Length: 516
Image 1: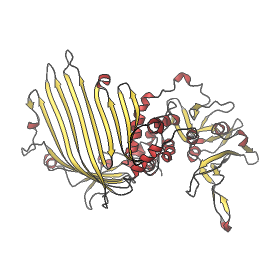
Image 2: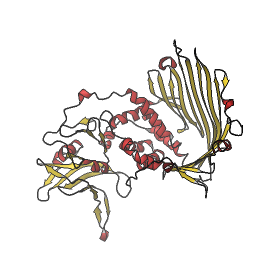
Image 3: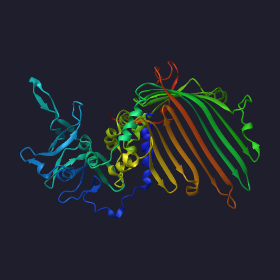
Image 4: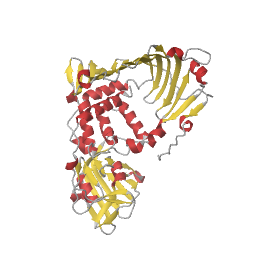
C-alpha cells in the first residue's frame, strides 16, 4: 500500500505529460548575463545588473531576484557602514523551529558583503532565553561564495538560501537557466481542494499503522508466435507461484515466494525444451525456485536469496548465499540525474503515507526536480490537479471516477470507492484501444477492503509482409494479495552466519559516498 500513492502520481504524470504544451523556443527572451533566470514560470528581465557565475556558482543580483520573489522594494535596506543588506517579506507561512503548527510572520533575510554567513529569521519564531526571557531564533547559513558587489549591485549565490527558504531551485543545462519556484506562492493561488485524496490517504494509513501479513499468488505468461515463408516458431515462458510478505510501517519488509518457471519452444516442429537437460540427464524445465528478499528502506539496504536444487545441479549455484544491494548508495550516485538524493526520496516516501494529501502536496512540489524551463512547478501542480483534485472526480453512488486521460486511443481512470463516508478501496486502470494504438493494453491496480489485485495484459501483431513473417506477441501478468494485521516482525537481514555477497563489489561497481 505504501507505494500506491507514488505509483498513482507517476502514472498520472506520465499520461498527462502527453497533453501539456511545451514552451516554444521562439518565446525565450534574449539572454542577459551568463544565464537565464526563470522565477515562477516567468523569465526575469534585469535592468541594471545581470546574472553572473563566480567560482562555478550561479550568482544573482539580490534586489531584482528578491523583489520578484515577493520582497517589497521598500523593505530592502542597505547599511553602508557595515555593508549589510536586509530584506523583509511580510506575512510568510512557516514551520516554527520548535516543531509546532505552521505560523504566520514576517521573514527577514540579512547578509554582509564578504561574509559567507547568511542569516534569516521569522518574526514569531521565538525560543526560551536565560532569565526566563524569549529570544528570536536566527538561522545561519554558510555559503561557499560570499556575497559581493559588482557594478554597485549586491550579488548572492542563491541556491543554498533558496533551499533553506523552501523554494524549489533547478538548472536547465540545455538552455542555461536557473529555475526558481516559490512553491508557497504558487499554492496560495491554487483554488483546488483534495478532500477525496485526504480520505484516500486515511485508508492508506490503515495498512502501515500495524504490521501486515500479505499472502497471495501471481502468474506471468509471455508468448510469441512467428509464422512465415521461411520459419514457424512458437515460444512461451511462464512463471507462477505463491508468496508471503510481512511489513512493518512503511519501510521494513520480508518477502518469500516459491515459484515454478516453465517454457515451451517449438522451432519448425522441433521441441527445443526437451533437448535441455542437466549433466545427469534431468530435464531443466519446469524449474522450481525459492526467492527471498529482506530489507528496510530506512537504510536502503536489501538482501536477496535464490534457492533451487535444479539451478545448483546445473551451475553449481550456492543456495546458501545472500546478495546485498545498497539501493541508497546507488540512488545517491544518480542524484545528479534524478534531482533527488536517497534521503529526500525516503522522506517523501514516508510523508506520502503519514500525511493527508493536502499536507503532502507542498513537499511533493518542493522535491520535484526542475531540469527544464518547459516544465516547472506550476506544470507539476497542473498534472497533480488533473489526477487528484476533487473537481476531477464525478460521483456515481459510492464511486468517484476521475477520467484523467482520454485521447489518442488511451483511456485512464482513477476510481475511489467509499462506504459510510470513508474510502474503502480504489481502482486505477489504463487501457489502449487496439484499433487506434495498434496493440491491446490493459493495466490495472485495485484494492477493495483488504484485498489487492494487479493485472497487466499487452498483445500485438506485426502483419506479414512479402518477405517478413507474421509475429504475434502477448504478455499477461496477474497478482493478488490479502492483507491481515499480524504481531510478526519482518526479518530485514539474512540469517545469522549466512554468507553475504556484496553485488557492488561482485560487479566492480564503485559508488562515491555523498555528504550527509
